[in-house]
Image (cartoon, rainbow, N blue to C red; front, top):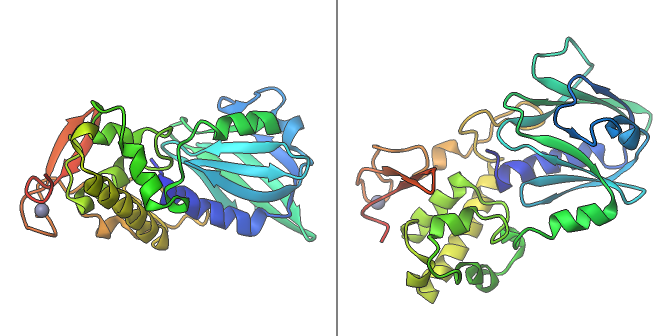
Length: 272
Ligand SMILES: [Zn+2]
């Protein structure tokens, strides 16, 4: 699933091209994951985009009338710019036709797994939605971020990292990577972490996310950006998806365990 670096990469690309654009027309090929289903088109058509923002893994298209469109890529949701609308591919669900400074832009929303969604929201609904998330790691100081890992004391570190209301935008890949960089096992209960470990973890979360963002994210599975390009961080991962391969720090074999139903990767020697 795309996490903060991948969603932020998409946000930057969308913002560059869509800020100031007007949505002229929407073709709905499949309306199973657009909300509200029957009024989606009429609510969105004619709106002018003022900015594309991001909160956690959510993309927010802000409109000039203070309403918004929120988009969640989930597993395989994808926005792709096309020169002109061609033949509809099987998993294309929505085609946006937009104009900006007299030029027409076409953007396709597709989603193979169909977990992603698009939702038209009022400004009040938007506030409620974004209010559910914890701090943004790249916009929060290390000490405040470290405080995310104080409670509940019996909770395992990996579960805290994946909880979007605890810390926003981190998913399975960067949770495992941050734990390895910090030398902490994801199985540890929060109560066992020292303040020094919490600070180290907060620092490593920020660095792994920003390093990945510089590479336009990780394409571990299907993720591609709005030009169809893959992210460049895959080869720089230290543990995620590397079970049985040597740890890049100590050469011990990387282990994969299942923790809270999620595949979790760690180095049994570097992480304590
Ligand atoms: Zn190691």
